[in-house]
Every structure is written in structure tokens, then in C-alpha cells.
Amino acid sequence: MEEKKLGLKSVISVSVGLVIATSCLVSLGQGAGTIGVIFIAAMVMACLLNMTTIASLSELNALMPNTTGGLAQYTLASMGPFPTLISMVGGYLLCNVLSSGVEASIFAYAMEQTFHLPIPRLVYTIVMSVILMIANLKGVDMFAKIQDWVAYLLVGSMALMGLIGALGLGTGQEVHQPYVMASDFSSVISMTAVAFWLFIGAEYAIPISKEVKNAKRNVPLGMMLGLVIICIVQSILVLGFHNYTDWGELADSAAPHLLYGVNLLGQPGMIWMAFVAALAVISSQNSGIQGLSSICQGMAKMNMMPQCFARTNKNGVPYIGVWFVSIAIMIFAVASNGSADAISFMILVGSVFWMISYILAHIDVIILRRRLPKAPRSFKSPGGIILQIIGIIGTVYMVLNISTDPAERHAIWILTAAVFAVLAVYAFFWIRYKMKIPVFKSVPLEKVMAMENSMYYLIRRRRGLCK
Image (cartoon, rainbow, N blue to C red; front, side):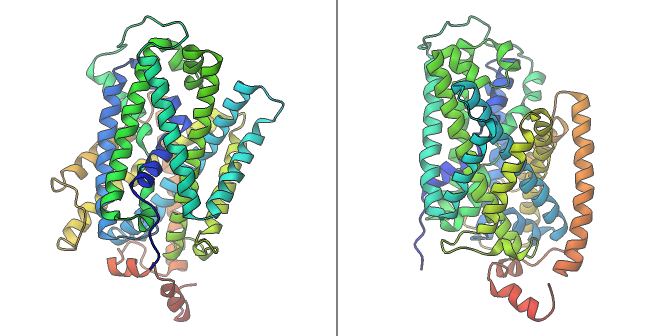
């Protein structure tokens, strides 16, 4: 039996890796700049809400361990292929490729603004993407080494920069301003939608669970610890923002982390924050490539994507997925170069799909609890289905308040509905004529688990049950 290579620290690094991204630093600055230090309260609420999702996904992973596709397989077993295909293509692939592309573009912008070298902005993006693609093709061991080092350097750098500012130890001029810009409960609640983005993505540790030692303990624990660490580090940064960056300038800045770095330590601080931005894009993109390629592999095993995505190289890596995700990220990075506002709008649309996927995870738990009450689970979320109900209500609220601008909010809803409609047509025909299974009927859990075996679709193809 092959020895599992990843421990608790790797689970934490993967959970932290996708969550702490450059766009999160931007959202952190905008949220804090709008209501002040009280934004920490909004962050705590958003963190707790995301923990309900982690609890649900951990229970689903305990019920169906070692599944490659994660949420795709859970939803297939509870609600059937139709919502599965829509949520995974829209909620994970589209959203993450879009956001990773913009992350790479923001990183290139930070490099250009900091170092002023005669290098085109897109070169930074392409070089970074190619390096991470090659590293991921080397296998899970190389992925873990990069992720561990980068994630802990990133968290350490952010924490140290935050502490320097919070304790007033910076070399720059301190700013005297109120701690709180808006103290009423409604203002804090309204900013939880902004804070929610700061904690999305911790579940990317699920696809690597079969590579984790003592997964039934380390996977849920690692994801929870990852969220707690992120909340603490970002809270310290908010305190640092208060002492060295004007709230108004912070809220309006396209790169608040660079603004804070300059105000805190001058040019060295800006370089340091550019280094943090580089670590953030390496961490998030490394996690994204690994996680999305694994999800594509799992969906291919279920015949929900072309079978080529299930192929692996000599290192056991689903290389078609790695190539596909890496190239797609580069394409969207190029598209966002000079048109970041349009792509940022698309990220908000993608985040709605992501939130819908979280709602489906909670529903999956409720359905499978009722359908399979005595099935063995090494982890079970406490409190019956209370956490799932709280998670559903809270996430629906986030969807309804995805933007503070009413016009933008309605535009997001309309575009989301349009994408849903297109994906619904695609899903219907793919399931009906490619998978050749009932469109709206759930698949028995044991059959979903059997799909992990390479012989499953070989036998079905021989019998003419699928193409």
C-alpha cells in the first residue's frame, strides 16, 4: 500500500493557500476602510458561517472517503447529476479560473508598480503560471513542498506586518482617526458579504484527503484551523491599517496592501507587500491548479467531463486537468489585463455560484442524513442539522447582498440566471445522451463510490451504456 505523504500542516497550508489571495487583501482593505476596525466583527461572523460549510463537507467526506471529485460526488449521490453538473462547472471551474486569472493579473500589476523594470506586465503572469504548472505536474509531493513553504511564509509575513502596524512600530507617520466608522448593527451585517470572500476556498483540502495521513481527523481539523488562522492574521492587519492608513484612502485604493506597506515602512514596506502579493498568488494558484485538476479528474470518472481528464502521468497527476486549468488561468489573466473591472464583476458572479455550491453541500448533508441515517461516518457535524440550516440561511443572505450597489447587484443576479440557463441546457443534453442516466434521479452512494475504479466505465462502454 502506498504511504500517504501529507500531514496536518499540509492540510492547513492548502486551506490557507486558496483563501488568502491578493483579491482578499483588496477586500480586506475595502471592508476595513468602509466601517473601520469593527469590520473584524463582520469577519468573525463570516468565518463562523464558513465553518458550518466546512463541517458539512467534512461529514460528507467522512461518509464518502477518498473520492476525487469531492462535492460533485456528494451531490450526485444526494440530488442527482443535474444540480451536480451545474454547480461544479459554474461554482468551481468557472469561478476559480476567473478569480485565479485576475489574481495573476493583480500580481503582475504589483510587480510593475513596485520595481519599474522594462518587462511587460503579462510576462510576470505567464512565467508564474508556467512554473506552477510544471511544479504541479511533478506530483503531490512537489505540490505540498511548495504549498507548505509559501503558505507559512505568507501567513508569517502578513502577521508580522500587521503586528508592526498594530503596535505602532512602523517608520512611517501614524494616522489619528476613529476606530469605528459605522457602529450600527445593520452596517456590520451588510459588510459580512464582503468579509465572506475572505474565507471562501478552505474546502480545497477535500480533494487531497486520500493523500493525507489520518484523514478523518486531519482534514476537518486542518480546514477549521486554517480559517481560524486566517481570521486572526487578517484581524491584526486591520488594526495595523487603523494606525497607518487613512480609512478613506484604504477603501478607494485598488492595491490597499501596497498602500499600507508604503505608509508603514516606506519603500521597503512596499517591496515587502509586493513579496506578500507574490506569495499570495503562488499559494492560491498552486492550490487552485491542484484542486481543480483533481475535481476535473473526479468528474471525468463520473463521465461528467471528457474521459481525458481522468488520465494521469507517471507521477499520478491528472495532467490534462493541470494543463487545462493553467492555460485557462493565463487566458483570463490576459483578458483581465487592462479590463480588471469587467473581470472583477465576473468574479462576483462566480462567487454567487460558489455560494450556491455551499448551499448544496448543506442540503446534501440533510438528505443523506435522512436517507442513510446508520451509515458509518468518522466525522459528524454536531447539533443535528442546526449548522446546516444556519449555513443555508446565512449563505442565501450573502447571495442577496453580493454587492452594496443595487444596480450591480441586479446585474449580477441577471447574469447568474443567464449562466444557469446555459449550463442547464448543457447539463441536460450531456447527462441524457453522454452519461445515459436519468437526469434528475440521484445515484446510489455505492455506485458513486464504484465510479472511482477505472474498470467502472470500461465495463459500461463495453455494454454500450455510455460513450
